Length: 154
Image (cartoon, rainbow, N blue to C red; front, side, top):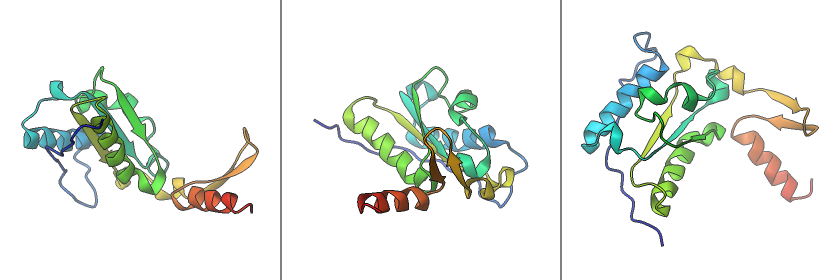
């Protein structure tokens, strides 16, 4: 039986085209601190963290490995979500599933992007996967198109 789920706090950073005053972990810390304050919670109350960003677009990889201590996730279980252009929605769905299933009571869902430190062209590539000898189209549209054509036998 699923648990009832609610969003109890939200936090966002100050939006500007560029934020040279903070690096990515510091920027994420701002949002998490605001969300925890909004929810009247502390970092110790977080059971698990769901992280996500457009890794290939920013060139910032394995965010869960290098910013956990900035966001209250140190020594806590976490899941990285990277689904291209659908990452933001996928983070929310994953966090909901953790809470609804009863695996965690308090789930921190963190999505971020700081394009001033990345380059979107990194993720708009089309390359070959040598391990599976197939082409790999990165981004949200490529895999969806592949799945649609594969189901039709094309």
